[in-house]
Amino acid sequence: MDVGTSAAVIAGITTFGKPGAELVKEFVGRVFGPTADAVGTTLSHPFVEFNKRRALRSEALLLRSAQILENQGYEAKAIPDALLMPLLNSGSLVDDEYLAEVWANLLASAATLSGKVRPAFPQILSEQLGKRPNSSSTFGPDLRRNTIHDGGLMT
Image (tube, rainbow, N blue to C red; front, top):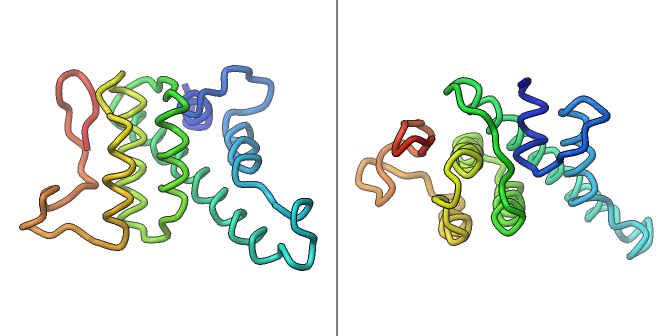
């Protein structure tokens, strides 16, 4: 399965007519889409630009998580909406490369570890926004590193 299709599967998109990467882009564009109709074009411009950035980050997170799975030899599975939306919502607010990689790894873990990535994880991680772990961190020295644990991908 190509990375774009894997990203679409992670997002729970099951109807494929377009290449997977296009479906992912369309999905996150609609989730974090422009708000011009609701507020008015001129007044909403900052919100529209903000949501465009979030959509681009969400797309990048989904594609990166699919790449992580491919590199590790795992097949992507759909993430339940109750977990996917908090992951994308919080992960799309991160513009730091290190933290974006942490979110991508959590998405990859959720796509392989059925039921083992708890809904509280996005909340816990979002509280760490802006904080980089160090060697004395609760999370350990490097959250970006992938390891195999209990038959799944763990960050």
